[in-house]
Image 1 (cartoon, rainbow, N blue to C red):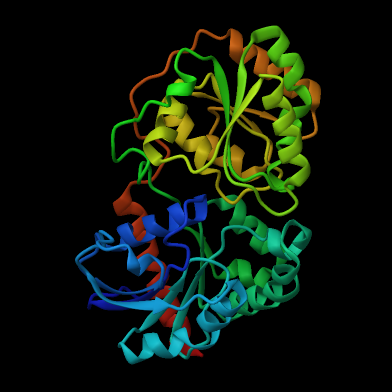
Image 2: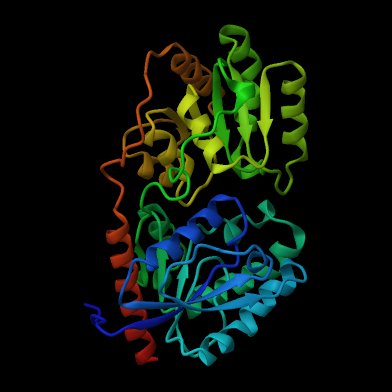
Length: 373
C-alpha cells in the first residue's frame, strides 16, 4: 500500500495543450480543475506561451506559479519540455512532475505520466513524419522513467501491461469525471441545423477515426432517411482522402462539416442529433461517447475496448469494418422514438472528488517509488 500524503504537495503540472480545442486538451484543462479542488496540493503550471497572452485563464486558487513554455515549432517545444522544464520545476520547489501528454521532463523529481493510448508506439504511421521519427523514443523513455502511470480506462491499463509487464505494474486507472467545459454553459443553437435530422461524428479526420466507414454507407442512409451526416472536427494526418469524400457528400447535400465548434454549440448538436457515430479503430477513452450518452443521445460506436468500457452497456457496438452493420444500425437509430433528456451524470462515471483522490494516491505511489530509486 502506498504511503498517504498529509502535508501540502507541490506538483509541477505540464499542460502544453492548454490552448487547444481537441479531446486531449479538454482533458488536460480538466486535470487542472481536478487538482484545483485539493487543499493538500499546490500547483506549478507549465502552459504554452500563447495561452498566457489571453488574459484571465480562470486558474484555480492553488496555482502558485506559472511557467511559460516557449513555442518555436512542435519539435523545439517538445525538446524544451523534455530537457529544460524539469529544472524550471525544481527551481520553484516542485516535489513531483505530472506530464499530461507523451513527454515527461527529465528530472530527479518523482514523475507521473498520463498515458492516453499507445498508438504512437504500435501504429506510428498515424502521425506526421517528424513525430513518428522522433517522438516514439521520447515516449518510451518517459514511460520507463515515470514512477507512476495514470490512464482514463482499464482498457488502456491492459494495453500498457500487454505491451510491457513492468509498465503495467505501475499503471492505474483514475477515470474521468463528467461534465467539464461542455456543460458549464447553456447550449447555443446551430442555426443551419435547426429542424434538420442529423447524425453526429466528433473528432479529427485521421485514418484512426475511421470516418470512411460512415462515408461509405451515407449515400444509402441519406436516400432512405434524408438524414445528414454532420462532422465536427479538424483535419489530421493523412486526412486528405477523407476530406475529399466528405466534400463530395456535402456537394450532394447529404453532409455538413463544422470546424472550430464552441462547447456551447457542440452541446446543442449532441442534444439534437439522432445519434453519435464513433467508428474509431482505437481510443484511450472516447469522450464524445460519454457526452452524447449524458444527454440521452443514441450512441453507435466501434468495438474498441475503451469505447465499450465507457459506454458501459449503453451503446451499440460494431466492428469498424462491418459496413452492413453500420448501415443497418444507423437506419434503426433513425427510426427510433428515443427522446433526449437534460444532462445527467451517468452512474458509472466517477465524481471529481473520486478522480482527484485517485490522482493524489498515484502521486503518493510515485513519491514512494522515487524514494526507492
